Amino acid sequence: MSKRDYYEILEVTQTTTDREIKRSYKRLAMKYHPDRNSGDDKAAEKFKEIKEAYEILSDPQKKRLMINMGMLHLSKEVMVHMAVLVELILEIFLVMFLEIFLVVEEEVVINIKHKEVQT
Image 1 (tube, rainbow, N blue to C red):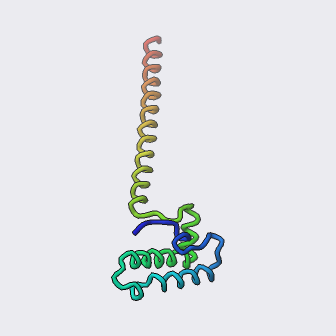
Image 2 (cartoon, rainbow, N blue to C red):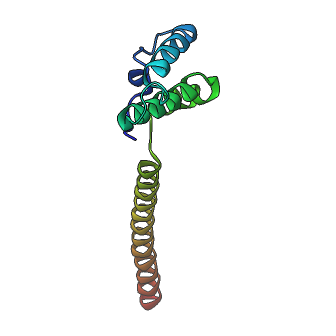
């Protein structure tokens, strides 16, 4: 199933009311329903997309989460890639921090030894 903007799938805009979203969902669901399009795999796929889009846009919590994230849809694969990227970035910062800390620590040890030698 292609992952697209849920509003685009239901042929509405982000300012569309819940009532209009429901009306558009019903119209499109009837148009692409498998019973009306027997044997048409594209229509069946479109019906699934429409159903998924309506499930998100008709649920206030899911819709709010989608809007707050600033993303209209993320597939599981994209989320996994984002998690790996965040982990990699954190690892890079950790390595950088440790290298800086070790250099500073090494300089402190050298300074202490240097002062001991001088006294």
